[in-house]
Image (cartoon, rainbow over the protein chains, first blue to last red):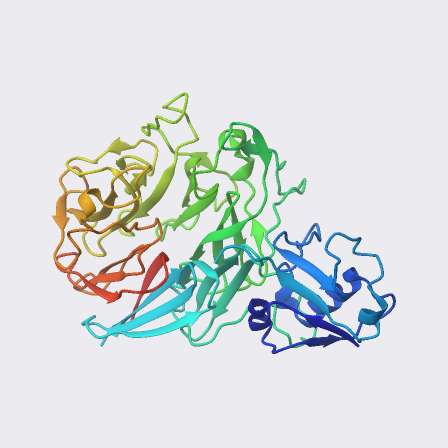
Length: 98
Length: 392
């Protein structure tokens, strides 16, 4: 089970509280986790990455295991601690605006 | 007794203000979608309980919300977490993809940027939602970068009416200060094929065939920021209004100038008359008097607040040129708010109500056509849009 933390506004949009848990089949990559997240919560489509280009929205970052994974390939494997559910993947909103 | 429901979109959420026909005692609900920018909300004329809302964020992009119970509860159309019989919903209610297909679309081309260079079209947000006059499942969206989209499934999915962007003048369109937005959509009850739209800064356009083909309707507009002031496109139209009983008569608040057309936009003429400033954003028409129009003059394009710090609505009962200041109940000193282009609305009660919202967070109501005003609320976040529904 993969653990994912999304920003508070997206929790409200998805009608969820706290950390999410997702089943991800096959290799655990950023793309696979986001695919699973959007399949389970379709209202999040387009809010984290662009519908068409699949590019990460610029004011969002992906952190895990004290690393910034935002600029790694979406098809690179996530850290083992994320893949085995020990650590969550954190989707973080940039500190900007008000 | 009739009631009114005012839909206020703000920088930090949506609010719904309701009152009976006297419009004296108001209930306020919200914020809905707290923390998000609500560019626009509008109810369906065919089903007043059906309301659409444009929810946007610099972080998370565009979300479309829909209510089927008059704003009590909301959903993202087609994006619920429950599995449907056909499989997972697609979550495409916020998917606005420009049509480049050879059959119906047009080359995406480029538009002019602030510095005069060409930039590709990129979807940013929905500025305006215009529900169909007779089908609660059909709604039009005006977006940035400027294009018009239509949904026929209650906003679950969207298709571009690509003939507008395919008109061929796109390379001359340019963004205004707020972005290159399509902010005005007017449907004509007397002619289902006719529609008007306006873009900052491209100008006004009309279709007579339901959105397949469009023509610019900017003759008579003059804009000092253009090298050719009489250009076919490139004008910064701020808002356009039409009375449903006079579909060929249009009123426009441009960047500067208040204008009027009596032939469906084919030719415009200035009706700014004695206004203290002909810069402004809103313009609207009285519900029962098609020659009575309202504007809120703003000092200038560099100073977006009322002249002399006096918040005044100006009313013309002659379709322009002759204007009177409406001040009773509005602050007449030290007022430096703005009234944005979609932040005025008119109800259709016998004593026509006029409403507008300010960037200072006030929503004002006049229950008597503008003679007297009072604030419904004073301390909302900056108001982006105001629409009113008149309910039986």
